[in-house]
Length: 350
Image 1 (cartoon, helix red, strand yellow):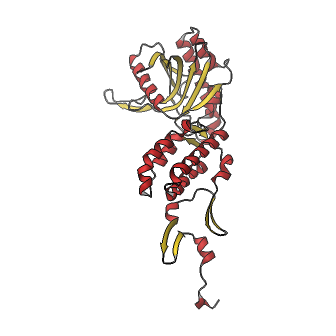
Image 2 (cartoon, rainbow, N blue to C red):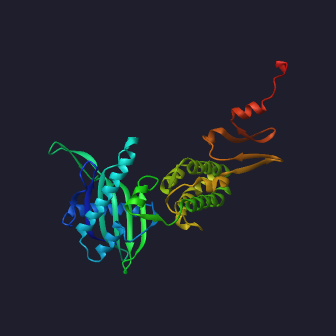
Image 3 (cartoon, rainbow, N blue to C red):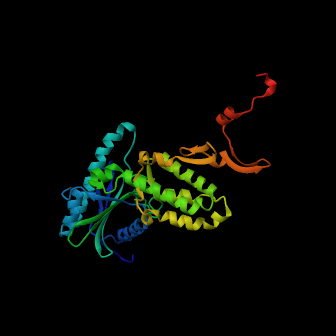
């Protein structure tokens, strides 16, 4: 891979059905594993998911083991100690969730030491361990997926020439980063809290919608905003690539916005880094900090407003605009509204 030099790599199976982590490769002699590691690195560095952390103490096992390796410590020994730490943490987690009928997913712990962009980086990632049928031996076996590396959880620690960890980036296949992965295994803390991320993300999206959509097509603005508000209100965590995928499915209502939509989508995708107040691409949503910002009012007439307090389910089918001989109007389908404003039937005698 260009710009990435794989220096060391190891693989352990972490399965609580075993008595401990199983060493699969630690000495760098498995050339097939190196090719697999390169595939994993390509997938990892192409992913947009990232949240920044810091090690709470360089004396903790994972952090200190990485420094020991930089000081010449044995790669095999240290990577095995890290795998044992993960096994022990997952065993503790399993005890706590047993009563819920939940099982900690087994997987392979792939650890890679690389030189990237002139700096030494350690990649620690847990990968799904899949069962497959070996047709040549007619046996059910387990192994790492070959078609696509399914990264469960990942940590990338970057060290400078003084052997100081200057960056720790975590990601997870789920919308939220598992607490046991960062708090107990890595012993790391978030650099930016969820409240700040939520506020910056929502405000950045709101500014882009106002600037690039509302001025061009109000109807597209309201439908898009409704989808995004629903995401912030109904999800516990935000993985920005999932939100981008949802926005990409929007079907523009106006021809003008249809032409501008690709450019808008590209700007939306770049928001985490391009925004005036950047935000991370994976974080827990703190709905309280944007509760007031979600509310919107549309002036209809003197002393007459339409108030939108949150996501409206099936908004496209519940509201439309048209005009007749009396003028322009907004049609809203609502049983409750109908009951409030229906005309009294003079034939009823009431």
